[in-house]
Every structure is written in structure tokens, then in C-alpha cells.
Image: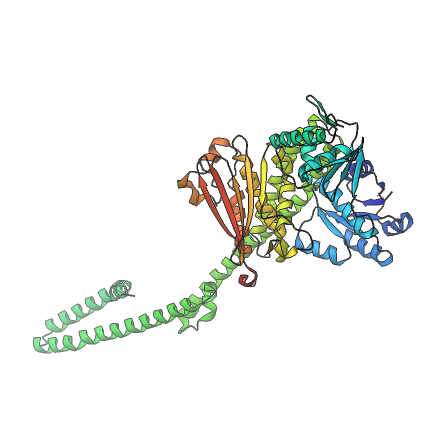
Length: 222
Length: 345
């Protein structure tokens, strides 16, 4: 499990970030004392630091410098200041990324993942997924069940990905559309229905006719 | 200066002259000077006075022309009084007065500039401060997903939009502009802008189509459309166009974002299938505060979005164009300059 340190002076943002990242499956430490921050970073040995720029006393730049003296831990700056000069300064001081508030939450998570992936070297994206007897071959875009297989489009693959991440749970259409948009598939409600119908007929082809169940007024479930 | 103006300035002097000559002639005539002698005196005296007047006029006129040409050649007109040599004491005093008045003006202007700068800085700070509570609210909504938070998120997105506009408006007017021209992936900018308006786009059931913006991965990266610009500013501009397209939508809204290579330049087109703009209003849409009949009908328009866009576009040397047919579509295009055409900024 990756450990992330949050250095943020606004208590509400700190707390909510804590909840958000914990829900995403990270081990989170939120610092409240910023004077000793670099020592605490040394103590906790995190895999990533989310660093706010506007801290009381010493600002994020100074802190970043101190941390960089001892450690190569990836740092993502999170800040309200969005001018190019600050961004340049942050990156030249050894920051790995620069995200401005108010951030789009999926984007923040994606950036965290990207930085972690880069820093830990390993972990190319998952190649395949499996749930309830269906296997997705992601790079080739193929669905497999009991030796039978068929090709699926990018949209269909992503729909299945979203559902298979949460087996047994009901995923609402809005959630599904949001997930697809996060993956640069900009579809509307009608197109989702069309995609769903096509996907179902493909699943029937390989003998999984009732793989996706519809819960009226609530969403989809596998 | 025309001769008549010169004479008008010396009306009193001329009258006294004529009066004195008349009194003198009368006196000489009454004391028995012969008429012939009198005429002789007058015919020398009067032309003499006229010639003196004329020479004086010529001198003043030449001096005036000289001063005018100095003024013409001055880059900073308010430094005029500093740049001329007074020809006499009188002029010297006049220039001194001018200098004082100029100084007062410069002080007033610099005060106003200072105030404006302070105000702009305050707006920037304020915008940065207001972003903290917006971020907190957004996180809270996200961590507690419910019907309520789903209703709040678009409202938050709108607040964010308004705040963002204020920030860029403050920035667009500043002398020390905050932008950096870099080689940037256009699809990245578009993706950012879409992500920022995702909540509103999805809520309004917008179908989004993109063309020419596929990222082809590492191998064929030369096919990716690159532009030389400041990504953040353009993200904001595209965001304005998107939110306009959402505001003036019809049922089943579709927004199409296309990128073409256009000779050495890149052209980005954002087309909606919305209510369009009346042809007679089209030339004015980039004006400050222009809301048009659409804005009046729907309300909530400020007439600032496109105005700020045009201002930012000018700095970035992006050409903006609009094409529209009422009740059919509106298409705004941005033509990014080729690298070679970017002048030093």
C-alpha cells in the first residue's frame, strides 16, 4: 500500500483529502505541524507528498527545498495560485507535478497514480481483468468466456471496466457516464443506451446473455 | 495662427494706436500744420506701424510652428515643457506653469495606476483565497455522493467559472502579463478544458464529438497537433466557448471540437447545434458587456466571456472568428499562430 503525506493548512480540505485518498486505498498521513514537516517526512518515509504552496510560516517552496535536500520522494504541488511563474518555480525546485485548486477529483487521483507509477518504476497498467467468469483482454480489446471470445469497441471495454471494478454493486448511469468522460469518451445518455445494447448482444454471443443486470431507475450491476 | 487671430489678440493695442494717431493729426491740424505735411507724416507713420505689426506676427507665427513641430515629434507629449528652450522670460514662465500642470497630471495618473494595480492584485489574491473553500466544498460533495451533492456540484462549477473569469479579466488588463508560450499538445489543452466543465456538460446531456485530436501514443507522435501557446490561458478560453455552447443549447445538444492543420497554423473549431446568433449582432459579440438578444432572453449573461477571450487571444496572437446561422449552429474558431510567426513578446 502506498503511503501519502498531505501537507495542507486548510483543515477542511485536509480532512476531506484524507477521506478521499483513504477511500482510494492509500495510507494517508496528514501533517498539522508544518515547522517540522521535513523531519516528519523523513520519519514516515512516504511514497508521495501532496504539498500546498500557501502554508503559514514557511511556504511550500521552502519546504520542498528542505525535503529535496534529504529525499527524492515524489512531490505534487497542490495550490490555489495558478500563475506560470509559480508553476515553473515549483517544477524547477524538484516538484513532480503541479495541480491547481479547485481540482477535478478524478484528475487529481489520475495525477497521483501517474506520479506513483513513474517513481516506483513498475506497474504498467493492468493487462486483463476478470469478474464472474468474464475475462477482458485490455490491450487487444477482446472479451473471453469459456473459450469463446469476441471483439469489443473502446467504449464497450470501458463500460465493462467500470462495472467490473465494482462487482455486485449497482452503478448508476450518471456514474457510468462520468467514468467514461474521465476516460475521454464523451457520450450522452442515448449513446450509452446504444452502446449497452450492442454490448449485451456481444455478451450473448459468447454465452453471457444475462451478465449485466438492469435495475430499473437505479443503474446496472454485474 | 491666422493674421485675423493675431489682430484679435491685439485689438486694444490697435485701437489705442488709431486713437493716438487721430488725436495727434487733429492736434497738428488745429495748430496750423499744413495738410500736405500731415499727410506726409501719416503716410510714413501708418505703413511703418503696419510693417512692425507684420514682423511681430511673422515671428510669433514661426515660433508657434516650431513649438508645434516639437510637440509633433514627441513620443511622450506630457514632457513637452521639459523639451523646449524658452525664447524669453514670458515663455519661460509659461513653460514653468505647463511643467507644474504636467507634473500634477502625472501624479494623478500614477496614483490611478497604482490604485488599479492594487485592485487587480487584490482581485487575484481574492480569487486564490476563494478557491480554498470551493475546493473544500467540492471534496465534501465528492466524499458524500448523494442527490444533494449532485445538485450542488454543477452550482459549484458555475461559481468556479465566474471566479475564473474574474481572474482572467484582471490578468488580461495587466501590463506585466503572466503567460508563457510553450510547445503544447492541443489535445491535452482541450482535454483539460472538457474536464473542467465535465459536470455541466454531463448534467445538460451534451454529446461531445472531437476530431483531429486523437493522441496517437509515442510512436507516431509527429501526427499529434502541437501549438505554440500558453496552455492555461487557452484552456480558459475553450472553457468559455464550452460554457457558452451549454448556455445557448437546444434539445439534444451536440458540441463538436475539431482541429485542422491550416497551412503552418492550427485551427481549432468549436461548433454547437444551439440557438445561434442573429446576423446583425454577430460583429459585436466580442465587445465588452455585449449580451445581445439571446443574453437578454435567457438572462445570466454578463457579456464578459468572449470579450476576455478576445483580449487573451490578442496577447497570444490567436485569431478568433465566429460563424453562425440562427437556430442552427454557432461555430467559433481559434487560429493558432505558426511558430515562425510568433513575434517577440
